[in-house]
Image (cartoon, rainbow, N blue to C red):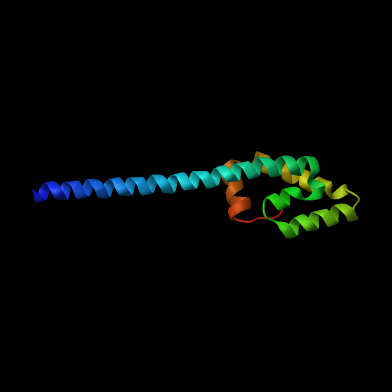
Length: 110
């Protein structure tokens, strides 16, 4: 009877470990998915209205967003080429590479 109890305990432990691993995988997938959403929104906004620096605020770069606005005002919008290039870079990176570079690594420019 004790062998049967040990077997049941082992099965329960393995089931608990499998549930925990599945939860960790699910949480990781959710964080990458949210990174994908920011990638698309930030990339499109950078291309269309990048001079306003909104893409920087979306990624959590408040200081860089304010700098982008000031540079655009001082240069009469000529510096708008910078966010245009950033938008293209954002959209051409893979989802994982974007997430690791701009959300985990916190790389504010290019």
